[in-house]
Every structure is written in structure tokens, then in C-alpha cells.
Length: 228
Image (tube, rainbow, N blue to C red):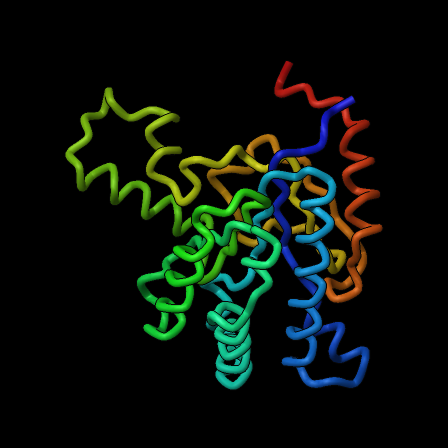
């Protein structure tokens, strides 16, 4: 039997479909999705998970309608600003990952403030993937390799890991995708080689702590061979 995973990553899919089914506007779906994310963070802590990576906004999400994107980022500001006590109250570590320098300065400032504020916390580390893409992460690693003049024979798996967005994180043992679709959607391409991918039919706002418990229970029974 496998032990409780150290690192779980989640593609939080289905906010917009949930809103449509419930005759609500899209932003209400995203608001409910944030509440679901908070519940899952609290439960992951109780279950002794060490890291949780949440796919909040991909680089490809910029293709959505402008009003939806603007509303979503206003939600992020509300969540990340200093008056939000979720991370500090629960002693969680906040770690944003992605092309953060390309974000609106207000958002970038809030991200950096919350990261600094929680840097010495001791509980669950929450990686929030925002303005993130897995292929783009690979591109950024290659740029870093070239910028420091690395010789070909010096390039290694360890170096690539060190220069990635997750230099100190174990690769996720589980990637959960809600909403029923089975695609990986440009998520953690450098880090998902041996992740168990588990699809939930539930839309993200309906995903709860019982669902997380069942998935971890299922994971513990999987025979992980790593190519052997």
C-alpha cells in the first residue's frame, strides 16, 4: 500500500459549466470554485499532504472573453490581498508559479506580498499556478540553461529540475482533473512523468473533501511500478 501522497496537483475544471447548470453567471462559478479550493486545502492539511498545486489560470485562458478574465482577476485580488486571512490563519505557505512578471502590477504585487507573508509558515504548501503553461515552463527552463552558459555535458535532469518552477517540490504523485475530461491541458509537463491521473466527473465547485478522501484511498491501492 502506498503512503499518503506528498504532492497532489489539481486541474480545477468545471466552474463555468457549473454556473450554467445552476443558471448563474460565470463569475459566480469561479467564486464557488474558490470556496471549493479552500475546503480541499483544509482537508489536504488534515490528511497530511505536504503540497497542493492548483491550476488557477493558464496562459491559454487569456483567450476567454475579456469581461470574464477581468472579473476572475478581480477575484484573485480579493483572495490574495492582505485582508484575506485564509493562508495566514491556517499557517499555509503560498507559492505562486508561472509567468508572474507578465501579470498586471497590482496582481503581481499582491502575489509577492502574500508569498513573503507566508514564507515562514509550517503547514501545507499551496502552489497556485497562475499565468502558467507546462510547455512554457519548459521554454523558460531552456532559456535559463542558455543564459548561464551551460555546456551540453552539464545538462542533467537535476539541473532542469533546479531551474524549473518547482525546484524544491517532489513531482505530484496524483493529478486530479474534475469535470470529466481526460486531457492534461498543458499542466506540469516537466513534472508528471509518473503521476497517477485520476478523473472526477464532478464539476469543480461540487468537488469536496469526501471526494479527495476517496481518491487518496484509491491511490494507496495502486501498484506503482515506475517502469519495472
